[in-house]
Image (cartoon, rainbow, N blue to C red; front, side):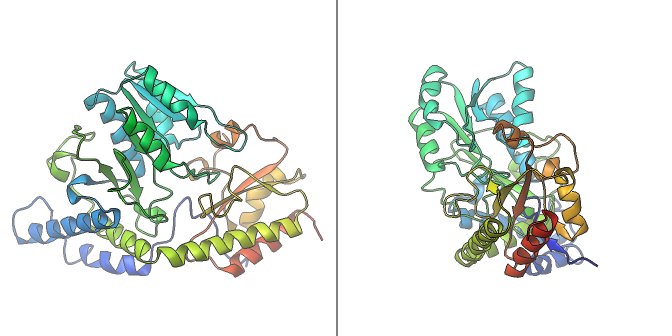
Length: 380
């Protein structure tokens, strides 16, 4: 039986046992509805508010600016839709490299005639022409910038501080999809002037189905999901109690171990780059993902040379026990290909594979994966 190697952590991460441990009591003993006023309800309501304080503390902001959601997609949808509905945004600046949670929302808003959208140009490495932003903001005074912090496929990082400065200088709203970078970088929201950022627990060893939206206190928006007074009237629906508790613990652990985590994962990424270059002639890397210090260090997007079995590469890796993806996790298992890689206008004869790492990935995992790849490509 093939060894099981998991290198698809940008899709989802395994839950940390310490996170599961703090969640379990809220799956068993503490089962009350947080909206109930009796003791069972008050007990769990307190747990949610403590989780909110933990998230706010990690981000150096106020608990009143943290709102729990079902994940990053809902958080992105809320920020974009309600900026148009409640903040009067008439124009949005984004890119074709964004996650579909953003792109599909922008497409919906534009088709409904609620907003116009400008997509920044990118070069063949996926670097955005952010220098075009000031002129666009001058031309469209009621604008929003929506650009992801770390690209989930090619690992390019946005100079988020620079872009946030552009937004503030021109009075624009700034939203950044930080799903891939939350729990992997430090965010100090007293120093970073953003209006909306998001997180999804399962990207940093928490449970699936829970995330959060940070809303800068200067913005007064309406609910995206109606139906109840939960989340201080900002999101209807009974709270995902155990998910919220798990999210807070996972983010707390990620923040506490950040320096060690970064060192470990950057070492793995450097190891994989070196071994691939040594063993597979013609290998290259997409985007800026091979720049270990200046890219999203958890992701490496590899371009393999033309080969007769390239169309079967992901399948063959899976047969050998290696789990990875050919692009965004949300496109895995489809035949549509990656919209991000398509935007880079890459050579269609090459196979592109995204490997992504976590604190549970080992050097042995990397070495064994490259050995398997070398065998598949018939190199000596």
